[in-house]
Image (cartoon, rainbow, N blue to C red; front, side):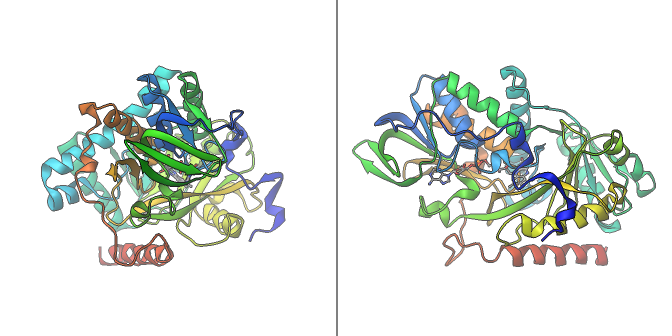
Length: 437
Ligand SMILES: Cc1cc2nc3c(=O)[nH]c(=O)nc-3n(C[C@H](O)[C@H](O)[C@H](O)COP(=O)(O)OP(=O)(O)OC[C@H]3O[C@@H](n4cnc5c(N)ncnc54)[C@H](O)[C@@H]3O)c2cc1C
């Protein structure tokens, strides 16, 4: 819990992004009897599938159990990267070089796809190639980071600059890190405005959005699929499921493979002019080398700092962690001052997987894409397009991410009780790396 004196008068327990991109109920509330394609979930995955299909001439209905954009797509931090929990080196060793290369090539394509879409569609969402600073949590982490990035530069051609601890203040006003690295070509967006822009383009292309309508089941009726919803039923030739961290009992096969976990964020009050630049001189995105990361960024549209961490904690709501997150932020950036107040606190659900990899595929004739493990802004956008291309019978619909089995665990039925424990184990592992290194 947080002391009320640390909340602004207009504090909202809502995503910061919703100030500029609020969720609005749809005016069309009647479920059409049929469509070429029914899409479940209105986040980046479902939306990009819908937009691509509608532009190819298909009739498309997007159904969401809440208002359009309710999920993680309008709740995330807006980091644009080539983020994967598995390193290129690990993938090459364990799964073969061509697989590792193909995975990293697709991560790169996903990043550039978002950049291209934002620019070519003219979506105003503060897209910015601001670069990313990765803070090393120990000397050993710094060495490992340098080794991995040097290898990636040699093999993948991706650029970076190591920042020793003595020079760290030119990147971030903290002494918490043991130096770090800058990846110059990564970026950021305002995810709410990006999502909002995509919804507008989809509407213009003829996509029908049905909100506050839960899809309860997907059955078969001849060559069609029959979706039963809380607003009646709809027939569709193809179905796309893009429910990621919000996946529940709709597709039990998926439920047994997706691990929902919660991410938490806060926004600071409006800071004095120049404060953000004093603390984060290059206005990049900032994260850490450990698995259980804290992440920081300047708000793109105000003198505020947005901060996330304590991922995977199992608490009733974001207010239960707002006080701890504030303290954590002040530990990293003490220059914010002890009287710092927060204006927003929120949470959202991510989709993890047992192999830490995103997955795309077709199960029982239903197209799905899930498991972005905190990197769904580029990957959700990208997989949305891939699912559409697959439905359209295009060879471009192929993805290397569909080639590996989607693992589950015995007895796992979608209850992620072990997530807080797993995060603790990651903490222990990271401390061990620091100690042993
Ligand atoms: C706090 C936080 C920070 C993050 N930061 C980043 C970041 O900086 N960069 C990054 O790349 N990624 C980040 N992510 C991850 C990213 O936001 C997600 O991976 C991505 O938005 C997933 O998009 P999606 O379309 O697959 O699912 P979502 O956007 O989560 O949408 C799923 C939708 O499905 C709907 N739904 C579920 N079941 C049903 C049903 N039965 N019937 C109808 N509708 C249903 C839900 O209501 C929801 O709207 C973050 C996530 C969180 C929570």
